[in-house]
Structures are given as structure tokens and as C-alpha cells.
Length: 93
Image 1 (cartoon, one colour):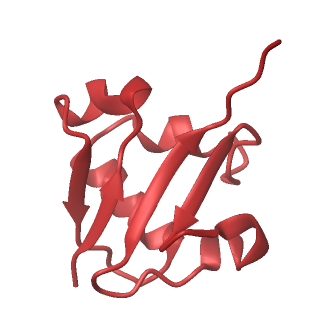
Image 2 (tube, one colour):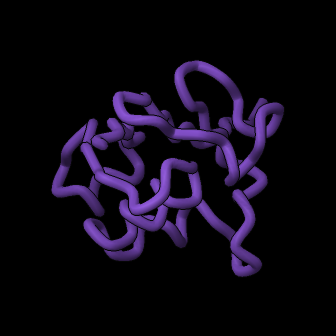
């Protein structure tokens, strides 16, 4: 049950420069996918999750083009073949 994860440029140092990686989460949720990312690419989850284990405020995550904040958060389903996109928010003026 492979899930594709798009990695933003700023986090590609954790994936050896790869823009997209595939992981096989132990459970088919975003939480399981992030755990699989951490196992394969140590340190990556700390850039996506805060100290309390919640999604960081300035990181947007989409599963198949749906914003997980409006779906189920970390409990959002990531079935086999799902596409997860991690997108850091951009601010400025």
C-alpha cells in the first residue's frame, strides 16, 4: 500500500533531493504516512508536526488535492495510491 508524498524544495535535504517519495504507512492515515516518512527520512516529521504532535500552523498538507484541515487532520485517510502534498505557507508583503 504505497502512498506518494510530494516534498517541497525546503525539505528536500531530508529526502536526498527527491521531489517525490513513496512510503508504505503501517496505517492508512495521514498520521501513519507521516510516521512512515519519519522512519524513512529522519527529522522530516519535526518540520511538519509541532511539539504537541499536531500539524504545524504554517504547513499545509493535502491528500488528493483536499486540505486535511477541512477533512480529518491527521486522521485523514491515505489509501493506497493517494497523493500527499506538503506545502509550506508563504507570507510576506
